Image (tube, rainbow, N blue to C red):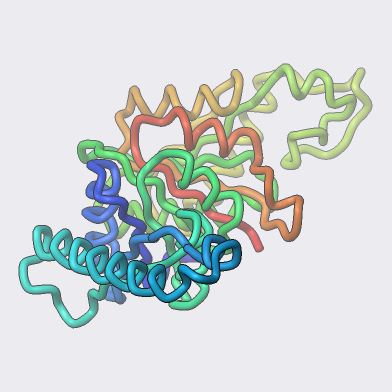
Length: 289
């Protein structure tokens, strides 16, 4: 699995969204794809339903709002790119920020959504069917691909490898052995899918867990034909990922999460959610659909 376009960047004219735009531009250039920059304006339909006598006035006000928002987005693009290339365009969505952005992602067949951290980002990640990059300012550093060896996390390793190659960055593949979860699982397979199931009385020593995980990570590096480090640590998964990214330092952390539909999509894996909120660098969430 590799990132692909078009790239949809959500902007609200804050410093955080300006950083998201910078990273969206870099991705669009690196992937040779289109860049779509979106701002979402409020929907006035509810007001029109309650007060139909104001519908015409609201329609005129709405169009003025859209025109001004579009001009503001185009100015922001011009600040970063000068004369915008033909592969860059501005669009205006409507509704709540996350719903408007997701609607534009569907309408434009976006392959990746980029936006700054915050409440809107949290909601977009929960519902998006494509990868989402939470862009934060960070210096050049390594790319970390984190995995628990579950199916959703495996495509994230491939994306991490492709991004490390594209960026010319070092790659670290990380697995965290959460000994507390392992001890409560009752079988060696509980939370450790790289080991065969075994009675809890036959749980292997921690050194064997580390060796098995390192072997899986090295196999992944060979499969992706890329140099990198295979790192296994023990501790709480999310905090360990965040701490490694901060100390490395990392410019990007890639994590995977389950593809979901309906109400179940309202929840993310707890590890992915905590990393998104706590990391000091950019985080790319890859969803298995």
